[in-house]
Image 1 (cartoon, rainbow, N blue to C red):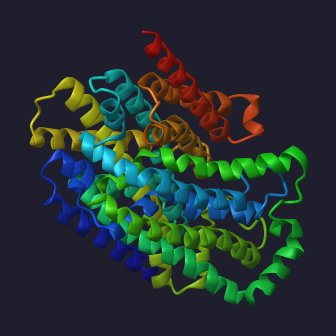
Image 2 (image 1 turned 60 degrees about the vertical axis):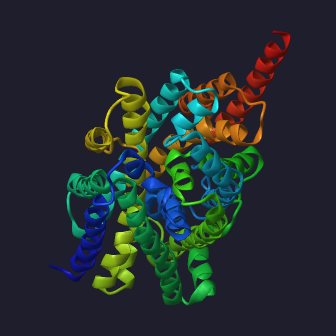
Image 3 (image 1 turned 180 degrees about the horizontal axis):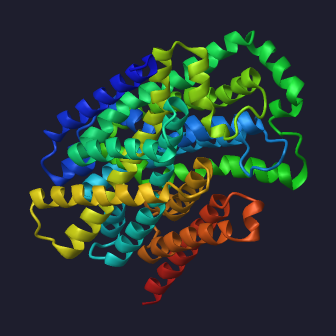
Length: 483
């Protein structure tokens, strides 16, 4: 076995051992879905960050910076890398401050294990329509999101070991599905904790060591300047609406954080609302370091390899690791890309599983099912979802584009509804339901219209949903007063 293979094998063994260990602690549905709400602040913070930043960050964002620079002077991307990175850090910060603590308190008070169930119980209980609509949106979007993570696994293993793309997809998917269905949230949270550290080391160590090889920042600037000085401009030499839409689109990506069910589940799983303050600080520092490192990695790769070196820019990170470091250490860092993919895919598998097993099977089909039956059904659903995602991973879109589509649909559907339900007492059930549908449909319609080339769909989808919830809730309030 090669030195790279040994490093990769060590990583896999650790992850599988954690999955087997955590399976022994998973006995009830609350254990499987939220780890019994017993996780500490460090585990929650790293799990939330690792889950939030998928193969999209390690391969997609770094590849985007390599191909297009900071501001994308070619104007081909609606979300220039530097503005996307800034928007994501701001979105993470806002979500931890506006949503985390209040959702932890209210979800426990209501006895809700999932976001669809939270909305149902928040607005009177026995409201299957709102629960089923939310479950449908989650299942649809996460099918594409999980597929993007499996695609990332395929690209990492293809570039590293020369495997076929599908072999890489199957290997990554098999590992994720195994430890997710074995240990549930315990396995996902603790593997995320380990993977979060690997991701952070990869995003900080690799670009800074490469920067040293290039002669520091001045050397990097000289090399990229010889290619195209505009690649280092945060405006990308854009003007007018092209510049404005790029900034809005990039910053708008951050709007999605408050509406991602796999991240919201982390807030709900922490052992107490008081621990949120500690987790929040850890998560925000992680985000600043990781996003800064991702942008720098794309730049140093551009300076090191030159432009056009990769047919697929999303294959850049594994090659850079192999070129800069000894093979055994490169194997560990390349595991960072798999860690990013796995930590997101496992969380999304689990959230989609919970939406089906808890919100449909338990609440709708068999309310009297035993805990053992519910855990068994959850594991079966996990397996089926994994197979569907493998099939969707072969769609021709890039990892970056697949993730942005799913991210936008979830962010527009749940972000405005959740923020208003936690902070505005006049928010009504019909307002939330209408907002979910309008936000989700708006993203799909925008992405499939000529407008898709003018602005990232989450921006209009989010604010359309926000306005819909406010208008419908005010209208409902007036009807009640007249009655």
